[in-house]
Amino acid sequence: MKNRIKAYSFILALLLALVLVPALCLAAAAPVDKPQKMLVKADVVDPKLFWSYPYITSDGFSRMPAAVQVVWSTANGFDPEKAVVIATGKDKGQVEIASERNAYVDIEIQVIDAKKVVLGKTSLQIRNTGKEVSFAVYPPETTAPTIELAQ
Image (cartoon, rainbow, N blue to C red; front, top):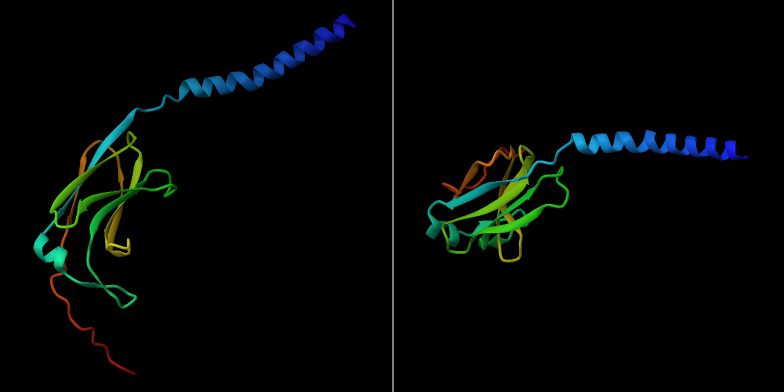
């Protein structure tokens, strides 16, 4: 009876060792990088015109810009974060993003109205090396009618 208990104890200890040792080795082998900060800057070119320019959205409404915001995520677009980088009437701003060093960060710059309707946007994916990323936001050079050949 004592031999059976010793055998079961030995087998149980062996199974635990087979499960725990590789997990501990993997945890020790993969050091977590400290968060790296990246600065995202945005400048409004010709702010007087930009903030007073009426933008016509795809739903046919004329809307005025209320803010420029940055939306970013690091985990394949899951759980994005937002921050207003330029408030109405201002001409520049910045936001600091923290992620793992060399992680890819999805960044989207949006011009929004007072109801949070996106009037225009651009996006990119960049590796966080701790450097600064700058964007310029400006009104369109011209607005003109669209003319196409009618069939």
